[in-house]
Length: 496
Image (cartoon, rainbow, N blue to C red; front, side, top):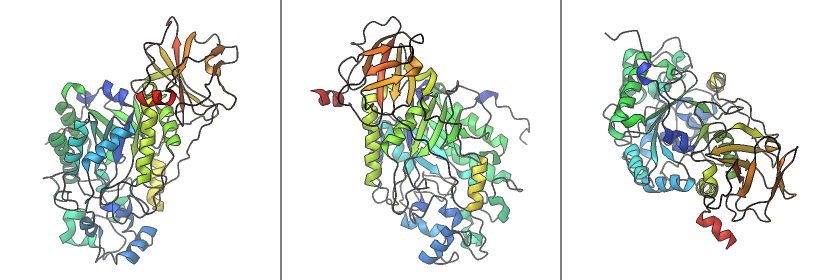
């Protein structure tokens, strides 16, 4: 019998330097829910809740829940256009440094070649080892690999208010799990997962670790449901498998003890820099979804870049989602947005990758409060069957974010000044001694003055890029940046 005294001491550790340097990751929600592409990735759950919009749409489009259940979407997830090399090239072009597919969402459909779970993407759907193929393609390009796990939500996920739904047919237990009381689909149910469920939860993660060695393990919220001994044993297994302490675990809320990995804020941020590395996971989608839906919309590159700069200035990483179609292809608008983000990073990446926070994170009216998709919002989503709102922040030309690398300070301006001058109050005289000012992507030094009110930097006539502009400032006794201020090939073409 396992001891009830659990010690997490063996898994306490700081995240590796590569993760703190990476700053930007990409992941992909892809599964049978991508077939109906209706509203969101919670389709697999809400289709079984009578009277919800998902349920009404499902019965109108596919028939009743007894004759056409979630399992019947498996063969329609063809993946005929799934190209792991294109996915990996998309990651590279986006500027992301770690990436991977959702390994298993809440729907018991594993995207790897699994012996633990027969319901997987090799036996069903695309008949491809999605995780394995993606990891091979990513590693060929020097990208760190990422696996996300949401399968603690499976406890009660499929329980239906329709007693005739196929989830209650004993022959379908392998698809949906054992039939449970309806109340187990609450965030905090009365009946918690039994030993068998927790063991399977752990074995799925350990199978991915042993077969594919992901550089990052991500756990969605509600992981607290899993027995502590299974969570701890999983973490010990993963970290012992990783060489040289290079593995990363990210988690939400208080589902794991502080100090065992990286806290993740879903669609969130902090109001100021933190002494610890953290992560925000958010989505490129402008619909209220993490997966492909009908008539998809996408956020502008400027909004995502501004969010990235805000997060990085506060010691965080941005993990951005984009969902492919059921056939494995991406919407061209999503591809264009990711290329735009990557194009900006190609010119301005030295202010992002490998940077660390300055003593002041931000200046300007676009002040970001502490935000997180917390338990109250999750419970609101469960009750309403729709995702709860989170206020989005937009920035102006008067907003700046600050990062540092060595002796250089980067002031990231969120807009181009109409009057030709940036005014940065944070760096007024008496704060920092500014020796030189340059603009990433521009070949000449910039004139500047420090007054009692602000550091005033003159902008060139034409911007070197779009969306945000990085002032590279040499501090203290650094006399010359000429040998260090290097332009990318794309930036040089602008001024040739």
